[in-house]
Image (tube, rainbow, N blue to C red; front, top):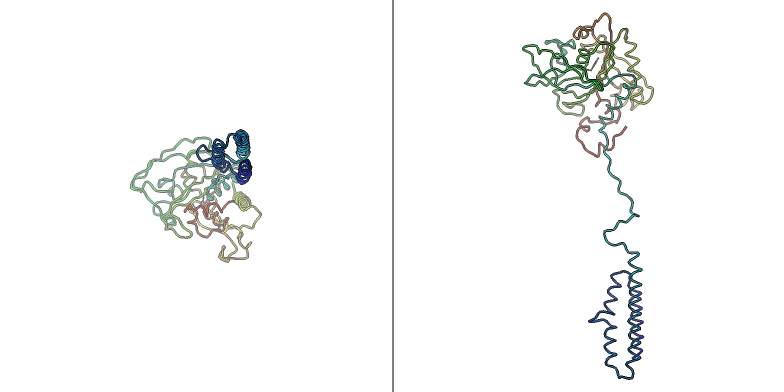
Length: 364
Ligand code: DAH
């Protein structure tokens, strides 16, 4: 009978060694100690049925075994519980989850880059309405009603009239000027360029003027690789006594160098805008080929960057500036066009499709 006790002890040892988890230890406990089917429970019952002379010794042996088993199970369970993480607990060794950071849209980045350059040269950044009237968008810019230059831009007109406002200047609120709409004219339109901001600013401020005005503009264009009916420009205007073409060239050369991040060749090509005289377009040496000619610059070696010129005296007259005393220069940059060049993007529509695969790739 005592060999029965020894057999059970070694069976228990084997079962305990094989139990490597808390739940496995529990199963072993059931197997040996459960009240109904436990192996030790059965042994104790068998002791009761043994002949009286053996009963005392056997009983003592069986009880000792039971205590040994209980102690071994408790120890083992405690040891395993200490190493096993309870379900749902924090695992501090896991690598952290990196949050997905948003980023500024590439067109915003280009606009801010332009703003930073001009802020560094002492310009103020101003903002104004996208709904515009005929006076600010055309007439005061030396484009009277039948002027052929109006056809350069396909205008989107609105039915209801809009009230004129003064420009909003960052930091200081300029007073608004109200100008009655001329009778018989289409009163309200979506501005086709930011040049109207020149007028709005000069109507409410006296020289010296040194401003840029970024913003959305609208034209009746269909979507294709190089056109969208809405796009973004930055207008620039400098007016003071003695401002010369040399100031224009120096300023815009400095801008181009800072924008593209290195010294590069530029050229001012004669052009025409009704609100400047003389007018020019600024080209910079192509980024893709360094001026040798490639697909990006259509083999010309040059990339067109902006339109500019010396403010036309008729514009000064329209805003009540003394054209004999003051001179100035103006320019208009297309942000999308610059962004296309800077990022080597081939289709302008990419900037408006909000495809994260595209947006997360382009960064300055
Ligand atoms: N308004 C012109 C455009 O939309 C750009 C421009 C050209 C602005 C010459 C100017 C300028 O201020 O002087 O294409």
